[in-house]
Length: 236
Length: 296
Image (cartoon, rainbow over the protein chains, first blue to last red):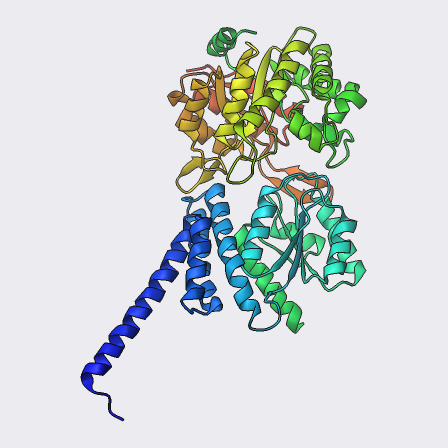
């Protein structure tokens, strides 16, 4: 049936306005993450769901570009730790709203189970917490064990949670050997979890030397690496 | 030592500080990850030996083994409630080593507790922790308070204000990295404005330590020393850390390091020394290089 031209135009105008409203919401969400405004991020996430936007689309087109832009600004030297952490917190606030909507679609949505901590003897927390926040915001189930975590506890948690990934941070050259110990213990345990290492003195060379599965030099790279390892784990 | 005395002394000649302490204690058998402050109580003779080695190498100032001896950090290392005991022991050890021939700098490092948005600690809590440590150091007889390795200007300022309350001279140093837009702490505090702020808060000398190589730190001194109103300090690492089969090694040679320290004095630094990975040999070579340097 032919639709009269005037009605067609009116329909397109409505659709266009809805599209614009959706785009405006996603842009606002992007900006809330980038600006580290967790209250606005949570509120906007609720609006997207009320407006009927699929949660996955909101994550992919609102939250993820926002956190990536924050990461780009960090690399440019425009953002520092506080900006990056508040951006991650805003993303987490929005994810807390969107997560249940994802869960409705089937089994609990998670890219994989992560166990993360700073190695024993090392009380440095910031880098590890930032990685944990970003992993969680990116859709991983994250168990943050805190600082100064003994090797045995990493293993026990990885076993209990059937973890896909163990992340171990070391901020001191004096505590780095604990990463080597963990790498050996994890291999010997026969658990499926892959090991990611990070921390200021840690390098790819060190990661290779101790037999870890990967190294990331910043929190965003850690998320990319975790995604890669989970895919590798699923296929090989 | 009164504040004016430190300022005057640093204007008269370049003071040579000491080098790395924690790395020396680890080389001497300190367990990995154990709070170095324990050794003030358990192995005072080993700490005294390190101080002595730096003094013999030519240090004018040595730092007490109290980098983590504020109540908040002591609690994390199993030494809760022992702030006065630990700091008093550390000053006494240093006094035995100097025997009046070198200045005792009471060392104060970060608490490890974060202010918002990274944490929930308040500036008042940080001030209170630093006040308790600074008082303990002053009562035990430190000549000055030396605040080091700060990343957050707000925490550094709290430490300076707490140290000022003792009426001792105060040195305060922050850790900057080279970013694309200049030198900043990881928290985003910029080099020159941060150090001016610390001077305004009452520090008698300000500067930068840790994180970077001596070559990068020469650039920091060149950029900042002329712009801050008090004597400038610089304590770089012994190059970059590398992991080998034998453990962690730093890649700078004592000769190159000493040359850079002399260049820093040339660029306006008044207090120079070493941070992570530096040893008495670095300081010995620095002494030779400084003695051969005519200040501008």
